[in-house]
Length: 113
Length: 131
Image (cartoon, rainbow over all chains, first blue to last red; front, side):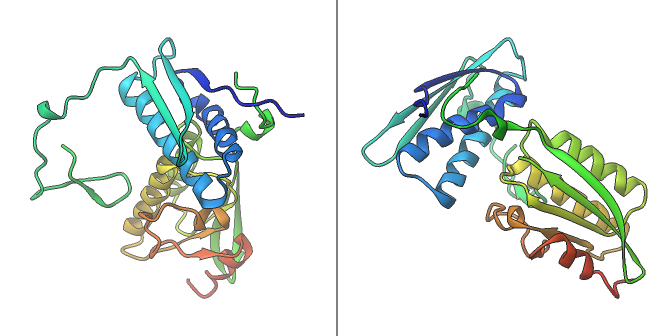
């Protein structure tokens, strides 16, 4: 007999815990009927969001926490990710220079400053 | 620790195996990746590929047959390696990606440059006559 996944998962800001979060969201998504590519995309979305929070929001400070919550909705699954990293204020970010986009890690270009 | 329905064994760390093989007189380095590749595990893959490029290896097969999941950090590492090899070879592309993991790369991936093939053996064979 398998246990139901917890609605809330609290993890330290440690990239080594990404897999744990992925398994958690997979369990929730599978219970709601997600499978195949949809499931992969949910795992990917959570991994990318959590990686960003850990690396850029919390600077990989394992004393800090990230809180994940799974909320089933009428149309699917809502995942809420919360942390106490500095808030991002888009109004204080310089406009991107589209004339000289910076190279991105994937080899394409990005318009981010 | 999450103790839900998924066996904790599925959280195993990534493992790498590297091997140099001969493809009709052409040396090919096969790097087999086993396990998920994300920001928490990609460092070892990146370090290994960087070392092999520094050693002068020019033809790679990155075997992703046993990679159930790869995020953008893994993809970026593959693309960076590809670019370094290509620059080193004066513009010749010389890497193959094998396996299901390659086919599941995000749509933004440089698919025209990465040629998914059925398995590592076929990928190595594709280098025959590439010398």
